[in-house]
Amino acid sequence: MILSLENQVALVTGASSGLGYACADGLAAAGASVVVNYNSHAEPAEALAEKIRQRGGKAIALGADVSNEEEVEKLFAQTIEKFGALDILVANSGLQKDAPIGEMSLADWNKVLEVNLTGQFLCARAAIKQFRQQGAQRNVSRAAGKIIHMSSVHQVIPWAGHVNYAASKGGVDLLMRSLAQEIGEERIRVNSIAPGAIATAINAKSRDGEAGKNLLKLIPYGRIGEPEDVANAVVWLASDLSDYVHGTTLFVDGGMTLYPGFRDNG
Ligand code: NAD
Image (cartoon, rainbow, N blue to C red; front, side, top):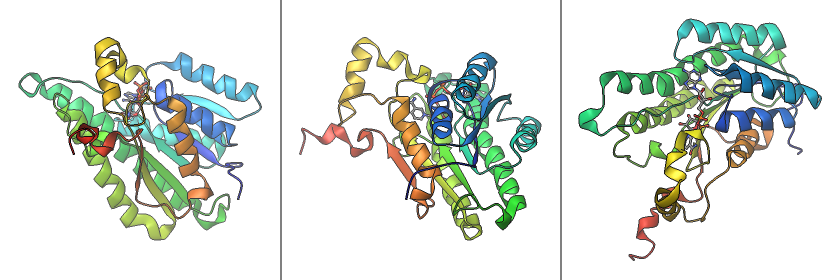
């Protein structure tokens, strides 16, 4: 079977930068029409949509805050208005607001949970409603729809100084698996990607100097990931090549979850 997303429509949240940008680009290269969602930075999202169109693809940039119910509903309505259907959701938007527990404000706790977890819920719910509405008539993939949640290795690795972020990603894991259990028989596939350390704006500080050297010690495969490493996995998970993969998390982490601290301690 050839990997192709021809005639399919994909929506990627938080696609004006980092992993979302690479995923939108990769899905478009595989043939999907793509909605490039952004929150506050329209320009790079518009530029990506234009780049995709220039090479013969179909893309549009749409603004929406994924933690705002009304804006999410509007984002999905605009997607259907533009492309007539939805087949793939990559719920990618996320942020960090780090602080030791004694200094973490309620506002920063809430903000991270609202974007990283509630945002995933709102987008998944809107996608499922659309998949159901399209029903069996839409015959572009073996699945009736595909949802890919962007989680993190911190859905399993505890992270001191980042309790809001780790709690949000732990929540994404059970959101994903519960949804997969609930709607699998409708042939809607639900999975997560859990990236390790990938070179994007979210972790720019932890990749520099001494911090960068220490970070590498946590990665058995010996390199920081590139956004394309994640995008390639997303394209595969969105395609029929992974049709029997459902309710699982694909770790794209160079082995970060292999307890590398035990390497020399056996
Ligand atoms: P990034 O900061 O470049 O991207 C995050 C995106 O989310 C941005 O485009 C931002 O505009 C968007 N966003 C933030 N708040 C939003 C909101 N309210 N509504 C809509 N969009 C919003 O960082 P990234 O590394 O590309 O992160 C993407 C995802 O990958 C996040 O969920 C992050 O937790 C996850 N992740 C990243 C890494 C990594 O090493 N880079 C590792 C594990 C998980």
